[in-house]
Image (cartoon, rainbow over all chains, first blue to last red):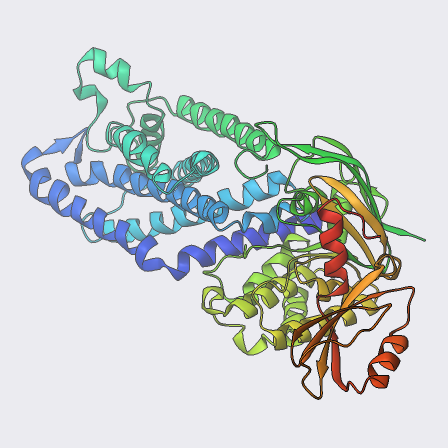
Amino acid sequence: MRLAEKYIAFRTILIREVLRFSRIWIQTILPPMITTALYFIIFGNLIGSQIGDMEGFRYMEFIVPGVIMMAVITNSYANVVSSFYGTKFQRNIEEMLISPVPNYVILLGFVSGGVARGLSVGVAVTVVSLFFSSLHIHNPWVVISMIVLTSILFAMAGFINGVFARSFDDISIIPTFVLTPLTYLGGIFYSISMLPEFWQTASRANPILYMINAFRYGFLGISDISLPVSYVISIGFIVILYFFSLHLLNRGYGIRT
Amino acid sequence: MKKALSIQNLGKTYRGGFEALKGISLEVGHGDFFALLGPNGAGKSTTIGIITSLVNKTRGKVYVYGKDIDTDFNAAKSCIGLVPQEFNFNVFEPVIEVVANQAGYYGIERSLAFQRAEKYLKHLKLWDKRRVMARNLSGGMKRRLMIARALVHEPRLLILDEPTAGVDIEIRRSMWSFLREINASGTTIILTTHYLEEAESLCRNIAIIDRGIIVEHSGMKELINKLHMETFILDLGTPLESLPDMPGHTLQLVDPHTIEAEISREKTINKLFADLTSRGIEVLSMRNKTNRLEELFMHLVDGESAE
């Protein structure tokens, strides 16, 4: 398959994925907007007004980057895990497997679909946040690069979950029992400097902490974590997950007999 | 003759030890309309799965138009179009997207993909359903959608795994005529089916697979000629109370209006009719008791000789 043909195949998968989540926008785009609006009302306005400033910013301004990032993480992951598992379940993955499209193009197509949904939700949630807080942007390049890297990373994690999933229950276990706790403990609503030393050290084992802090740095110019470390961790995880995903596809795990 | 498909000593043992294919070899010439028949679980779908890379083989070689599926799999895959046994498209996509997306996976530009989708959806009488979600199609329409999807990249080898299962006779016959057209235009077709009259009517060559081995691989006519005894049903003009003595014929009176006659291929039917006429028995019509291929098939897969 020539490079131009691979690009067409990639674009086909991406368009298919974007159309998929766009058709069901009431299930994919609207719910995170409502959820984050509730976060802003309850935690930002009602409770936040009692908390006062955090790291030199109003509590509402402090939580906005983390809440946006949470929506991006959840949606990038959910898009790929549900789409890939659905493709396996309906067996239309066979449409791709019998064609000459290389496995890495299949992987990149699904991941890009997840990134597209993550970024769409990120933009939608950012617009919602403007109703509650003014938007500071300290460094737009950090904001853009970190949100793209994070959505790539979690789209790939969703892909791996989709490959291993054998039932619809399996696609909700990781988000419920792993992703949500790690996201909440990743410093969305607090700075880890508020924690006892032991828990500060323990929090550093949570990769989501690095992404949320780097993203917050892009908006507010403050972070509990050094920026280069956040980039190294994010890119490192992406590389590891990419090769693991590709290995699973090449072996035909769960898709070939 | 150029080979569309060459299979050599193909074996597949599933995890758990079940040996689905026990080293089969098979050749299909370019332009052929080839029947791959066998009872359920014989290994037909496993063979097709290996050719189309959905199933990993345990041993053996497969060449599609001379391309080794192990070393030149992209070129081999480009040659193949598959209509699987089970519906395997995204039921939440509109019909036209199911077809156009498949073209995209073969690197066909989107505008051309939609042109091709239009061409094949029109051929298969699905064009007016192009915006309908695939889940809302009837069973026959879903089968035709899978044929359109398999043809959209214009493969040289089209593999159809029971394409007419559950399809009514009118649509089945229109599908036959379409497949004949596709074959006449140069596409090699491999067909698996449980409708043996379909295989006899469409295919020129045949392989019968049973319990993972090829029990017959020949031309359709040569195979039919191996059938030494045929059973005919004769519908009578006037009822009979009992059969008259007719030496040299094996007859049975099924009911007063029907005779079942077993006729060896060495004898002519004329002799039977002459003897019936001389005894004043009128025959209104005559038909095969079962399809000829079906009779042979039953002999072969039961391990009995057709002699």
